[in-house]
Structure formats: C-alpha cells, structure tokens
Length: 451
Image 1 (tube, helix red, strand yellow):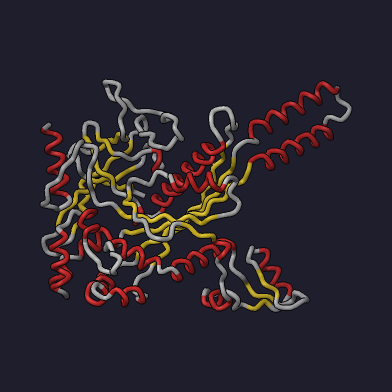
Image 2 (cartoon, one colour):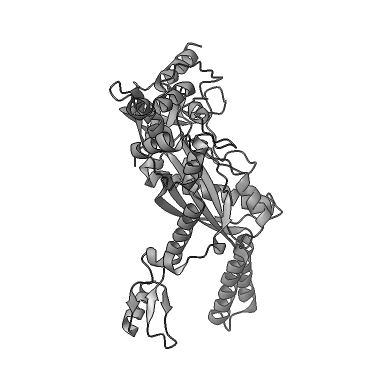
C-alpha cells in the first residue's frame, strides 16, 4: 500500500497537477503522451479487401500515444491526380533532356522520364514512384486541410464552431478554466501559461499514412518450383527415374510449405504538426473566436519527418491453425508494429516516453512490439517545472539497459498466447520488460530510448 501511495504521489507531482488523481494499480500510470492520427492508403490489390479493412479498423492502437482521430480515415491514392503545375512546383518537368546520352543516364539512374516527341529524343524527368506517393500525400494534406483538422481536434471544436480546452485538460492534466482565462487575457501574460500545453501536447501531434501491398505467395512459390523442376530435368538427364522423382517431390514439398499466405509490403510516412509560439499566438488571438477565419486559414501545416518501408512473410497453411482472415490480420498487425518501432528508433521526436511502473527490478511496459530484443539503452527522465518559464522540462537522472533475458513479448498474436512470457517468483505473468540501471530510479519516472 505504501508503494502504491508513493507511486500516485510521485506521478501527480511529475505531471504538475493539483487535481485529484485516482489510480487502480501501479501499472496504470497517467502521463503526457504524444498524439497520433493513422490514415490508410487503400489499394485494390488487397487479397481480401473486407478482411484487410477489418484488420486495419481493429488494429490495436499503439498505447504509447493518444488516439487523435480526424475525419479522414483512408483514401485511394490512385484517385489522386497531380497536375503539371504541381509537378513543376515540386521541381519536376524542368530539366529537359535533349539527347540520347542524357536520357540514357536518367534511365540508368532509375529516374522516370516523359518523352516530348515521337522520336523519343527529347524528354523531361518525372518523379519516381516513391516521390510521386509523397507528392500525392502532400496534396491530400493540403486539399483536405488536415493540419487544421488536427488542431481543431485538440480544441474539441463543436458543431457551431466553438473551441474549448477540455481535451487538453484531459491529456495534459491542466485546469481547463485557467487555460481559457489565459486566452481571454490575451497577449503576453495570458499566452505564457499556454506555452506548456503547446510544447508538451499540441506540438507532439503526428499523422501517419500507411500503404499496404499484399502479394500472394503461391505464384512466386510456383515459379520457384517450376524453375527447380526445369533444373532437375536438365541436370539429372539420364539418371534413374526414381532419383528424378525424389528430387521432384523435394521441390513440391518446398512449394507446399511456401505457397500459402501472403507477403506484405508496407510503406509508412510520418508527419508532425508544425506548432510554435508564433502560430499559437495567432491562433489564440485571431482564430479562437473566429471559426470562419480558422477554416480559411493556411496557418497550420504538417511537416514530413520520415518514411519506413517494411516487409513481412507469412507462410502458415490455411485450414490448419489459422483462417485466411487471421493470417491477414497477423501479417498486417506485425508489419505495422515493426514500421512504428523503426520510425521510433530513427526519429527522436517520435520516440515515446514510458513510465517506470515498479523498481527492484526496474520494470516498464515496453517490449518486443516496440522492437526491443534486449541490450537497448534508455535515458531516465524526471519531469520538472521551470519556475522562470513556467514550462515543463525533462531532467536526465540516470540510464538503464533492457535486460536481454527479460524482454516482454507484447506483440499481437491473433488470439494466441505470447510466444515468450515473463513470470514473477509466484508464477504470475509480468506485463513489462526488466531493466538494469541506477538504484536512484523511482516509479513514475520516464524512460526514453537512446538512438
């Protein structure tokens, strides 16, 4: 009981709130998370579109982020057409190639070209598929004013266009009436008290765009089998038929093992809301009480952070232990989880902070789903309030390393039990990874992985 009370008090102090704070267990820590909107780029190549869409819609949302849903949930990228002016603005169609050598060099370097004459002697450089996808995503962002949608979600915009601070209060543990009073005061004094909400919450808003491409394994497996049999026929000509039959059976066996299921290729683009003091001041002073001006405003934008390509191979046999829908579900979830884990490692701004839920041993709810395999290093951060600026700051007070022998398997297994399971001395499952490090660490402090 003393540990539970200490934990609650510690976290309450760390988040800088004076409001009452209830907690059922020392594993249910409330802390300021980054916010995330997830958008699917649809495709007609889904093997079972209903199953894919069902899996995506039921994807276990990453619990290290706040779910920040906006109106746009998915779109078909093939329906997005880039105009010539948009391509020119992006820097394409400008470099005219006027001889065969220039055109050949462009093609060899995998730059698509568009011929301008029937003789194919004059051409301009076009975007690659990767560049075209990002240009189309940027077009969707701009045409749909997605940055505005992210902002209005933060301020709980009502049907009549009014904003309030209830969501910021909920996620940041602030006093909503005090924040709204600060907006009413305006300018320097009022906006200063809103700076922390901007730094800690609004600025850490992310949007991902995920494109999934399922490729059935059977056609590829059949090609490998047929090629193997052709090689057998050529290399074993004149050999006893029994040996040839044995080799054919071996090729068929490999085919049977690899023909079921799908290979899943995914691309995930990560964007962050552009939010700073200048943008905040304009919003609170000019747009807060003027919904129509907000709708027309181009003040807000999403900034590209990075892209992650990922591949999964799933070869279970349908009808044995999993249905086709379960295979698709498992492939999608594992693939997207891996993409997020890699984006977190590659982009410091996207790394989640996770609280220490217990000490002796040091334990935190992060594991294989986030890409841990043991040996990863984490900074231990203590949240403090700077009395001069009134803003939250994170002070490093130590470091820890994930215990290679005790990494939590928190991956989604389509109804199965975890492949590995940590147990305490009494044989009860442990929902977290063990860490080795400083003895000064206390429950409620935050861990952030070091790149």
